[in-house]
Image 1: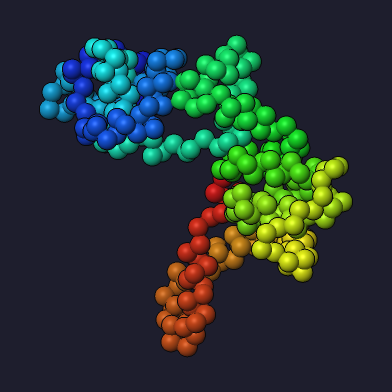
Image 2: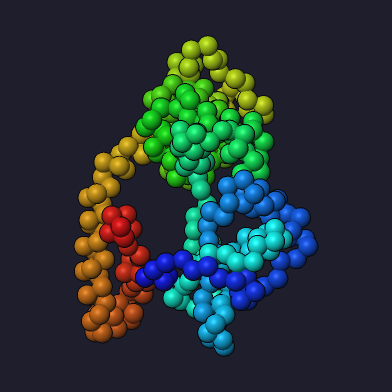
Amino acid sequence: MGFEATGVRISIADIRALHPVTDQIRTSAKYAQIVASIQEVGLVEPPIVAHDPRDTAKYILLDGHLRLDVLQAMGETSVICLVSTDDEAFTYNKRVNRLAIIQEHRMILKALERGASEERIARALNVDVGSIKRKRRLLDGICPEAAELLKDKHIALNAFWELKKMVPMRQIEAAEIMIAMNKFTIGYVRSLVAATPAANLVAGRKPRSTKGLSGEQIALMEREAGNLDRELKIAEQSYGTDHLDLVLIKGYLGRLLSNAKVVRYLAQWHQEILAEFQKITDLEATGPTSA
């Protein structure tokens, strides 16, 4: 276990912070958001501490410097903490991925289902109510298959309004292209919409002339998008077989290069081939193998 079994209420005076919270930090948006959250719903995530090796009656603060500073400013004298069994002074939040927008949307829906108002959620997150309303309607008009593909991707909020201009099948194609190209910007999504034939736009939508692009360039984008979609489907069909072949080849070459005589021969007569063999054996596991 990374922590002791239960949380412990600790006097704030017995917790030694590893770095100070400056006045500049106290004026930041993140600090204001933490203040709003604690005032509205209380402390959600307990600070992380470890026993101080110099004084076992005291603790070192590993994570939660801003939360602790806010609590002190509010007049609190103690706080429930998680006590780490690892005394390394690293920031735990570096191990946490930023929440994707679809995940945030689903959390907002769950909070609304449990009776929280949009106004209270906005106050807790220190944002305007309009932002909560937009995020609540995020997936209206997005087909479930496209939403599933993009559920853990960090995409701009306005990019979803662009996706809604396309019919469901085209939304799925666009999501697959975005993932294949690893591009999730609003500009890239707009280019996909611009390259979408009128038949693949929702009723009432017309292909919009994109600033800076001629008709020929848009037609080229349409062809390239179609080619990329076909290549993606071909790659998907052969991925499993290709991955198995790569694993077998890597294993064989690994055994081959463990033979000193073979390595000396290749180094003397076929240096280029030896270099390529070494690149293959140095490849990290990918896909299902790493999972």
